[in-house]
Length: 480
Image 1 (cartoon, one colour):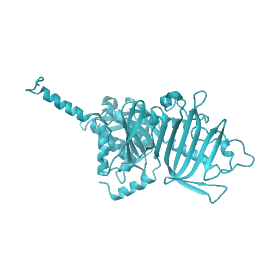
Image 2: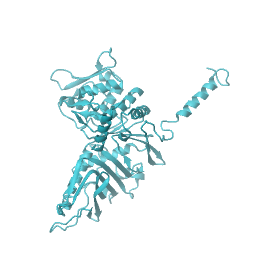
Image 3: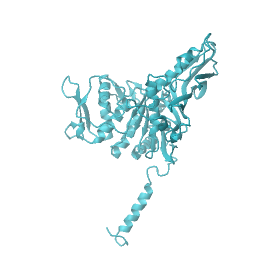
Image 4: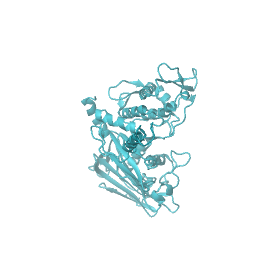
């Protein structure tokens, strides 16, 4: 059982954790309004097929690729064949394809360190905060492309608003209001404000209009920082290869299909990255750490990545399915190993403070491995790297009952606190996605199970019993 010291340390880490803490989306695809969604270090989303749960991750990817694009005038980059995601047209993105509606979203996150804003024209006006809240509203322009209607920022300290900024569009120009700090025009610069850039930026010309608006560029940089650390692993992973190429590069992540998993594993190991599963647990080099988790999942007994020959850039992935089996290539064992490997590597490879969105990481795994995968992800949010907490955030879309059951057990055992997890169920009712928060008590019990959460199990049991009675000797049915 965890010690009291462990709990105290975890509470301190959670308080200072740099991560997304809340999101809300309106009029996006299946969502008329998600309501405020609390995002915990480990957030798990269940739901029926085509209910709309994946689109929550898709909008984060759209925001990230908008941040990374050089075109400052495009409000929202919906994507193309070379981008992180292709959402189609703006009409495709709108709820009910209604271009007369307003697409809006908000993100709230804890800052990596407290931010202080000083009014350069009034030395006594100092505002500090440890959280940022960004909201944006987009509408369709005449060519049916997304256009920024308004963006707003709030700097918060322990939930209390310190500064509020609203930047809107007015005709061909823009408006900018800040409270309680008052913005003052620079001498000779009373030109109209520019409209907002992208979904989060202030035009340089707008900031030059004022004597004391420099801090607003810092708000935009904080948005870029948090979205740059959002990563995504899709439900369809690349099949295994007999030989992998690696020339020493260090990929940013494992790729949306896990295609860079082996390169990432080799790069992290070559860098000498050392991880442990939690506070004061055994340290291991990155490759040994991942191999140990594969063994603990129960999918293999041994895992190794080796060059085909000395000095070569080609590598083989060799595994043993059990201790007495011969060593074989990854391509010669069950599909599950190659499909879960990217999930494990991504969970521990991404930069500290990253947010990782995964769809169906349990795919192709047997029930015991699905249960053990929950332990791996709990470890991912509690892991240390080179003696420092990694502070990784995981958002998992899954259909696995076994994953949830293990998570409940670990809450009851005190391995993970209820505050460290958030569990949701998504259903679609008449074209509208609906989100239900599952309440978990300290014993791991879910207090509000949705109807038919994992199917109608009791109906299946009753039907099976009736069928058995009907087919038994002496009944009117056919005897077995």
